[in-house]
Image (cartoon, rainbow, N blue to C red; front, side):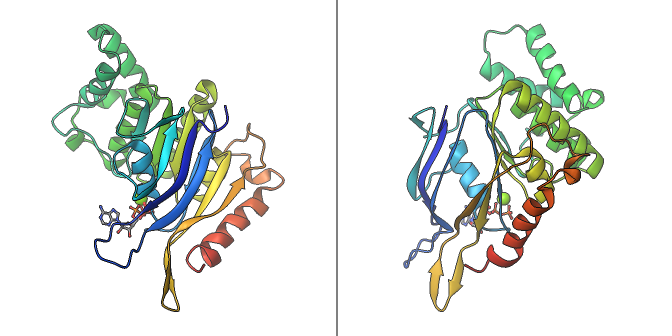
Length: 267
Ligand SMILES: Nc1ncnc2c1ncn2[C@@H]1O[C@H](COP(=O)(O)OP(=O)(O)OP(=O)(O)O)[C@@H](O)[C@H]1O
Ligand SMILES: [Mg+2]
């Protein structure tokens, strides 16, 4: 069970000239099967870049990523990705955007099976009334929900979520957080999620990775890194409404906020 996803010594340098100036370096962590891990850090520290490498959409400058003991070398239906900005096919309706992924995953299914499956996941994100609309007819939050439904619909071994709720209003965000938590608990889904929202991380994550930005200090460049891993000590049965009543909640929240305010950009 341990180390379902293993990230070893990852670094990424986009610069093409010397000296090397990696966005982050020496990033190593593992995620156990069924674990929900969030990563928090300021803009530009490299969170999306890490997620893209885990998705197989980008390659690292150094280091390796293994899922189920196999090295990740490209994208796969074993991993469902929700992007920071939605990535829907604009010429296809909501139904067809999701069906496209479902058919790729289960090529033998009948149209009726595919449709029933698609409808189940569209209902999950509350979009049945818009199922036959195209992305251009949807709001940003609705498009984001289609992306979430699509990632869940292929029932991947692992979900990679890049600020999936960023574009949602508070009410929808809460509803979908609850849905996500219920499905993840029920299916023992393994999740790696990027968020800027400290409370969201505390609600959802078993473990929270705190990532610092690369920084220049006295002429020396230090790449970004995972500065700390925080285990969430709160009971897993926590709810949004009850979160701030739990003993330990404020300590955890203050610790993460302190990191973001004082340590994430300083080194
Ligand atoms: N394709 C690219 N080419 C060059 N530089 C890139 C590329 N992609 C990302 N970067 C740079 O790498 C750094 C990290 O980017 P990344 O998108 O991973 O940050 P992030 O932590 O996800 O930020 P945010 O919270 O704003 O989404 C940034 O400085 C960005 O400009
Ligand atoms: Mg990002």
